[in-house]
Length: 116
Image 1 (cartoon, helix red, strand yellow):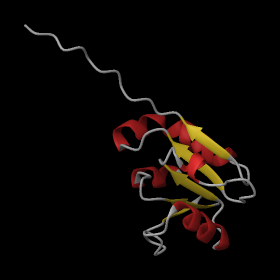
Image 2 (image 1 turned 90 degrees about the horizontal axis):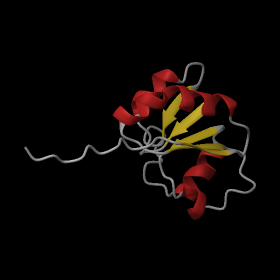
Image 3 (image 1 turned 120 degrees about the vertical axis):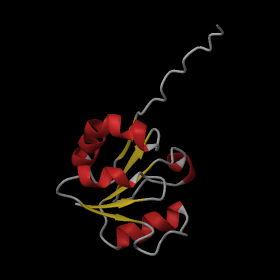
Image 4 (image 1 turned 30 degrees about the vertical axis):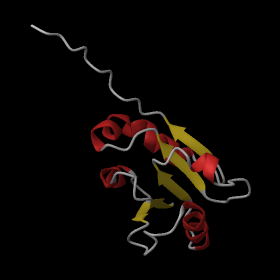
């Protein structure tokens, strides 16, 4: 499946998506496109899945009628994402046309400050 990463998706994830052809919006010359135009360009170019960490996408765009699947990462820093690769790969592999899935990636708990 052809997968498009937006600028917020960590590129370290690409090698873990075995069997998928991954490109970035930047590589396609779409780095300056806003989300709606980016989704349209991706669909018209044959991409089947859009991977982003933009959690507001669902509220900013009218997604009904889209053919492209969307997977949203709960967080984008690579140290957090790499701890959830299995869940992300599963979301990508099971995505259906037009689906929207958010993969929860919680922030680590803060350690309490203790004075000595």
